[in-house]
Length: 53
Image 1 (tube, rainbow, N blue to C red):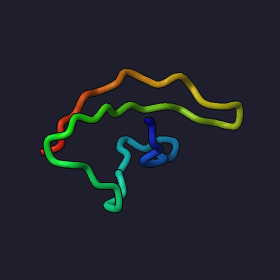
Image 2: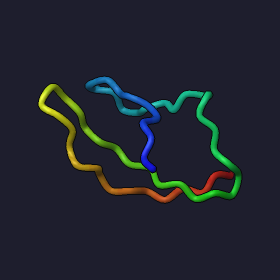
Image 3: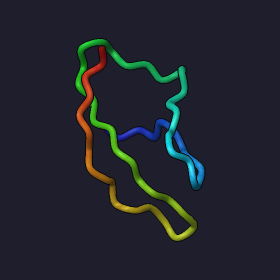
């Protein structure tokens, strides 16, 4: 189930995921970016698979 991990600000080149979010070693996760403004949210961008080290 999708979960919001972080919100970036306009012009930022990276988004930092808070340390309170934990990932289980060896589990596969899908991460993606999505834009949001006063008119709503964009569709999800390309998903990246990532396995937690």
